[in-house]
View 1 (cartoon, rainbow, N blue to C red):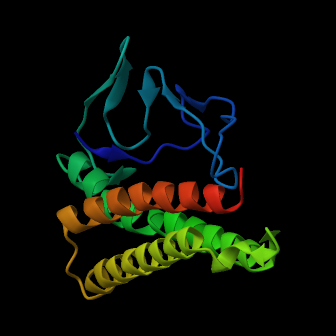
View 2 (view 1 turned 135 degrees about the horizontal axis):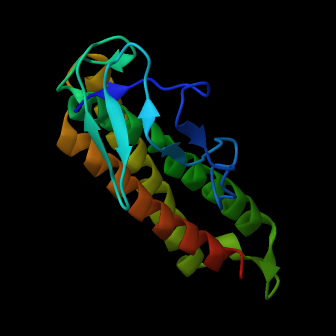
Length: 179
């Protein structure tokens, strides 16, 4: 297997209409469709099947990483993708904290700012420490990657951990906002 570099003009290759996504709308996403696709100069053919695309390959023009390296090309980018995408949940946590903390310092209940209530202070402290622990984890893994020490476990772990903690922080923010 190899990674091919198809473009719109290649016979048998086209893209489906852009997907209407719930999140990351700034990143256009569509399905890549290969139907008896011919990649010029690559001397291999992608044969359409009902569920998967199988490949038969040989020459290296329009091929990424060389023949037999397709999975390697795919997997080498996966760790960096996970690392980069981990910034999304961190940014969401920061926004949730900013909005909820500001609200807690201005919203009054029973003649007192809700930010002075022990339960709200506990939620805010948990949100703040969770967010900063996530930031430290992400920055540590990113620094290691910058230095050439990319860890599959850490890159997978950081996006999993940040996504889970982001949900927790946002649920606490919703509680503070009284929704």
